[in-house]
Image (cartoon, rainbow, N blue to C red; front, side):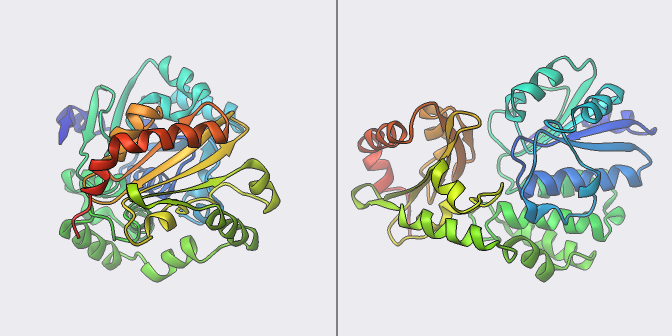
Length: 342
């Protein structure tokens, strides 16, 4: 764990401040839950916070309390720039390096004259003035809960904050099934339920709000599944044409990679998604056991994340991406065959 400049940050926040809270590009449940929970908490402390995210996030997260006040940098640029220029500090949540916000927003943040405060659980964080980093914690939302606790403010957690935090922890732990989910995580979840988080409604809002097109896209993805049993590996592909065919919307591929990982005997899974807007193949990796997809992605696919969940990218065609991936598997055969201990 890294806890840097915490007492100085506490001192800085003793009087009301204009604050911007930033999540990473393509925000997920943990990013939105963490940014909005911190937004509500800082408001209760008398500050003037604004949440700015690089781009749109999935529709199944729009119900989160405070979502209606969030700015998207890419299409609410003037409002976002104004908030950033007027802020006295920027909180960076659920990402470890400025490039994670995308090129346009990165260039704006790199010119920012004031200080950053980072709360994040990804490996190898950039150095900023104030930092709370812990790669052993399952989600940034759990870290925000613990940040509030470090300030002796757990009594300020209301239903809105509890709902946001529960959502982020639930989504980043695969509904509490990943190895990073600890007994402390469950104790925090119990406290959030006591403080007003309605676990059944949160689950329904996130997981039971599929569009017809999303289910058909899932069917297409599963029909594209390829398995390599000699490497305990499986992967899924989705092209732009397939996404368009089923009226793809942001968030429709969330969690699809886990279907590949759910196969018996599979310890390493990937999904390759064509992204014409960025002219890349977007990649999500998942693993079981000791095989680090964070290191695999850093070494080969310009990405990173956690040991068992990471992202990456490849600048080439879908076929080139698949061939590059397949060529790597023999080098990791021993690691993959010994990764998971049942």
